Amino acid sequence: MFEVLGDREAQQEIRDRNPDKMHCLDLEVSANGCDGCPHNPVRNKTPDVVKKEREILEENIPCLEHVIALSDYVRMGLVRELKDLSPDEALALRMTWQHTRAREKAFNAEMMMQVMGLGMLGGAR
Image 1 (cartoon, helix red, strand yellow):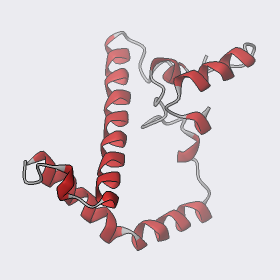
Image 2 (cartoon, one colour):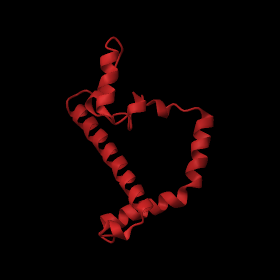
Image 3 (cartoon, helix red, strand yellow):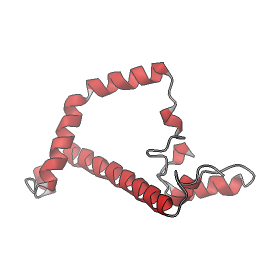
Image 4 (cartoon, one colour):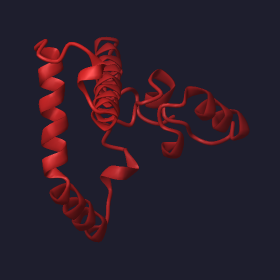
């Protein structure tokens, strides 16, 4: 399922093809339910993968800082039109917002499930 994270229809096709398998309630509630989930396969990385990801992150810190600053500038109203941004900046900003929205949706779904007494979105069934 992780390969089709965020794609509710593709996830449902997998469930339909495998009705006898256990399926995660997190993903039934939110197509992005893996965000923040302790059962997320990405959280269980080998030390080599963690090291490589850290290297990639460190190489891209200036770009990430620029995107974070752009996001802040837009929220504060300092950038008012997309024409004020380069195409790369606009794309990076859009990707940042999409990621943020996905995390907010997953968080909201988790809160709803806790209110309903199901804890960490009920776990796998």
